[in-house]
Length: 252
Ligand SMILES: NC(=O)c1ccc[n+]([C@@H]2O[C@H](COP(=O)([O-])OP(=O)(O)OC[C@H]3O[C@@H](n4cnc5c(N)ncnc54)[C@H](OP(=O)(O)O)[C@@H]3O)[C@@H](O)[C@H]2O)c1
Image 1 (cartoon, protein in one colour):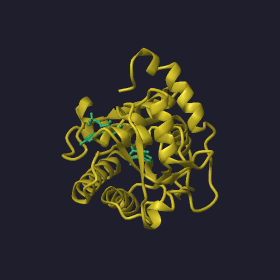
Image 2 (cartoon, helix red, strand yellow):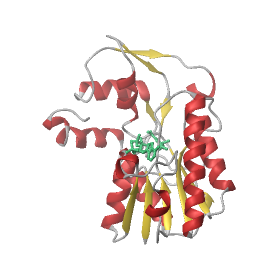
Image 3 (cartoon, protein in one colour):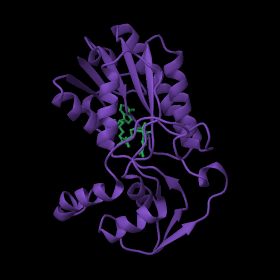
């Protein structure tokens, strides 16, 4: 299969490309660094020539609704229009568990991305996954100051490698519409994850101050029903990171 990966240079995208190659498929990376801009549409038609399936793991880092909606709507529409012109048979989108239960500017963007896929001319599948094991680290990087204020959230984190494997498996199947929620093996406290990450040397050493969060967000971003579960726990992932990148310096 020739599979175009939108965001193929990103955290998830790199794993998707690696998994595709290992399975004998032909990945095509769609990213600005590779001359394809999803927002302007530049380079899309040429890159999608002969592509069977598209996997969208592109991203914009923002908490602002207007930025998130603007990106996911434009990128999704351009990608789907070009995919339809190229005769792509299956469009796969990575989304996030709970985005319709939790109010967030970024999640509004993800809901738009799902809506664009549903309204497009290419048969589609949307896989909603829980937060990655990297989530605590990504959050800590954005929190300034000598004390890290971390929301008291309950999450069920998953290895991004397992998410990539699930996306590639889905890409080879018939379009499913909304696929079941994919979550990690264990429920964890985000505050505890942040503390363990700092203790392991994976983030700047400083005290973590838990911040109570009201409403649905505070009650967790957990899957609402049965579905596939990953295998690797946060602790196992942490041990793997220490052996790999942290011993050679610090994960980027
Ligand atoms: N983080 C989590 O816990 C989590 C959980 C579940 C689902 N997800 C979802 O997973 C997806 C991937 O997230 P990620 O953290 O892996 O992404 P990421 O590391 O931020 O990578 C983003 C990718 O998008 C590309 N991109 C951005 N703007 C572009 C543009 N205008 N045109 C073409 N390519 C563009 C980037 O490449 P260039 O910069 O070269 O363009 C890069 O390859 C997101 O949709 C996110 O919602 C994340």
